[in-house]
Length: 36
Image (tube, rainbow, N blue to C red; front, side):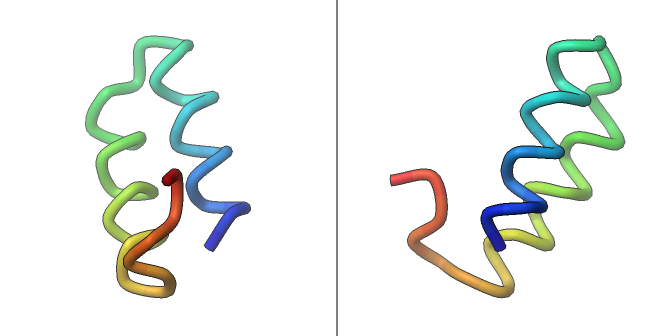
C-alpha cells in the first residue's frame, strides 16, 4: 500500500491529480491506515 501512496504523492506533485487519486484509492483499499 505504501508504494501506491508514495506513487500517488509523486503524481500529485507532477500535477497528475486524477492519476494520483486512483493510486490513493488503491492504497486505501490495501491498507485503510496508509499515510497516517
